[in-house]
Amino acid sequence: MRLPKRALVAVGLLAFVPTGASAWPAEAVVAISRDARKLLPRSLSRLLGEREAQVLDELRRFPPNLSQALAEDLPGGRLRPDTVAALEAQADRVIELLKEGQVSQGVVRLGGLLRIPADLSDPVLAVGPEGWPPGVTREYYALFAANLNRMPVVLDDPEALKLSRKDLPAMWQSLVERSRVQAPVIRTELFRGGRVVDHRQLDYRSPAWAVSSIAYSRAVTATAATWLAVWRASRGDTTRVPRAREVRPQDPGSALADDRRPPAPEAP
Image 1 (cartoon, one colour):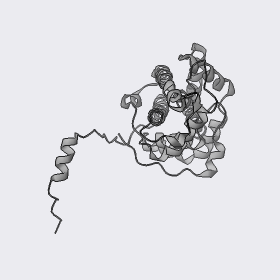
Image 2: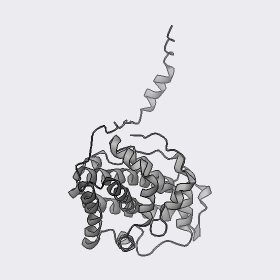
Image 3: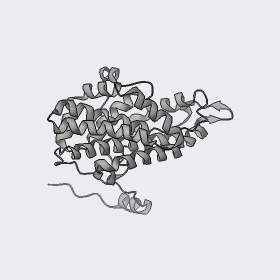
Image 4: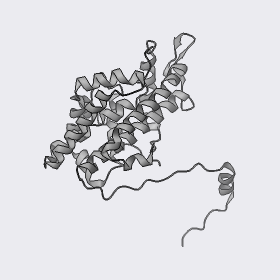
């Protein structure tokens, strides 16, 4: 499924985006939020959209101890039980607020959960204990930022949008594992012969470009899945969900045959 092109990010919103442990470029965090909203029921998408500035501020205030726990677990490829329990507590607090009728605060806290799937989907944070050579992550994120508006946004896993609240820990762990597999590709592409590769030497044919595109779509899908699972658990409205448009690769022969067909007659 390919989603519509994202809107340009307003510079004023970027001041609300967290820095530090959240390694995605600032404009990517805003874009993840906006693209994930396209997968939600219309009512929830509207509630989050109306509170975008507050949600971004909530992301900035994500608990530092939880950010640290994620940073410690990602290199090992597995979330510790204590980390999972802390993540679940964040989600359960949102459910409590929404069930208590504190909709505005609950929706803002719900938006703040984006930090969980976004960080877990980032292969840079999933590097092993050896870490990155100096300059590699700078060039990787520069490559990503330069191509963000050219990357197709795809639904990473349609079934993820049907998950329940109890399924979230397993999904979060799967994000860690998939990010961990992709991390070596970044090193191979951006560190050659003992030197860092300038991102301007790479384009859409580079495996590093592919990794960044796939990781972005993974973050978008997982963010929407996390929001939906928590929203369902709080008995939120799940009607009027946008329908995904499936795009299938076309056989080259069929495409050529289509090109040779005579044009359709114009309407009178």
